[in-house]
Length: 96
Image (tube, rainbow, N blue to C red; front, side, top):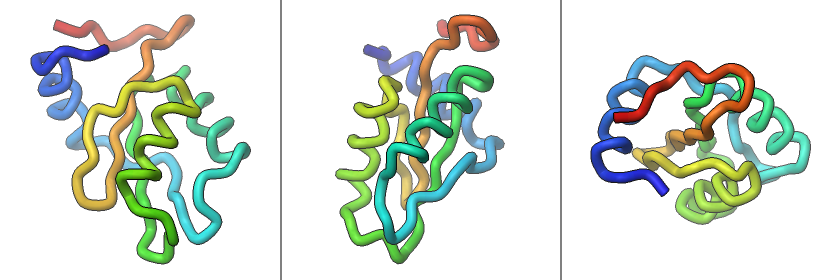
C-alpha cells in the first residue's frame, strides 16, 4: 500500500510518461494483462489509456487492471490510469 507522499511522487513522475497500452471495446483481456506485467517489470511506472468505445466504467477498468496485474493504482485522471509495481530485476524508482 502506497502512502499519500509516495503517490504524489509517482504522480509527478508519471506526468511525462506516454501510455503503454489502450483498453478498448473488448475490455481487459489476459493478453493485455500479460503486456502490462512485462511493462511494469521493465519500467515500474506505466500509464494505460481507456478509449471512448470501452463499454465498462473507467473506475471498474482501473480497479481490474490493478488487481489482475498485482500493481498499485496510483491515479485515475480522465481516461488515463497510472499503475506502479516495484520491479524485481530492474528497480529504478526509489520511493520517499
